Image 1 (tube, rainbow, N blue to C red):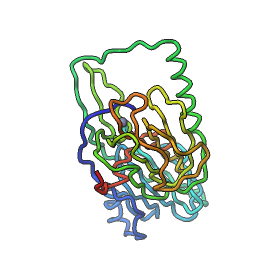
Image 2 (cartoon, helix red, strand yellow):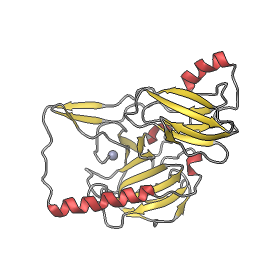
Image 3 (cartoon, protein in one colour):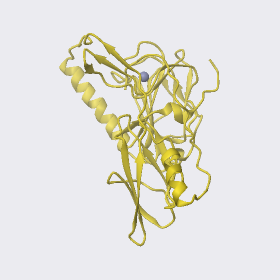
Image 4 (spheres, rainbow, N blue to C red):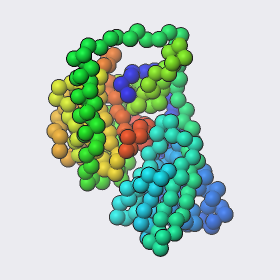
Length: 295
Ligand SMILES: [Zn+2]
């Protein structure tokens, strides 16, 4: 998630608003559901990109007592709203089951569209830099802090909002891109990079609660900021020069939280913005949509 890669590609912009409240006849609804993930006779509403790296917003029909995705229980708000994040490498189908109060299930098979990732093959392996025992121990501690922070859950409704860009500028790295070194796939790029000078303010894309604010720069992420947007959705900001919020702070969409930098492993000043849903990496770029030009 810290690799700095490549140029921007055009990524389709997903509609991320809630779907219109329509109920289609069952026969046409099946087709519509396949194409848009929209409403169907079972009353389950989905909107957003049902594709690898996508985030889907759903509304369960009244009387739904439980939801599962591939057997895993999904969190559901009291009003029936829920989220599904599809990992960059999500399999082609996902099975969504809604259990009603009378014990009956409705099953929706989701066809997950493949993502289009920028893959670059290089003939040689990167030079491995051996790490000292101290570096290894430090890294283990940093990872433990990230895992612990991500495990904390907060009541915040940020997940219901449409994200704004934390900062605008040239996209210098896209989600999902990957280098293959002499046939060995490297880790894929797990966020979107926006290149701007050090000190450029960075805002929270959604309402949320700060769960990690690394005062001492992490070895890879530098000054790392993690924000919980609720419902398993979170943002990570890497390489910051400055963090202006503390763990436990509530932030609102558009609120400045820090500034761009090049701390940690970075080739130059930029913001690496990553989003996760329950540990799955999703692509922030189509969620934030077209960027208002301010370069
Ligand atoms: Zn990056």
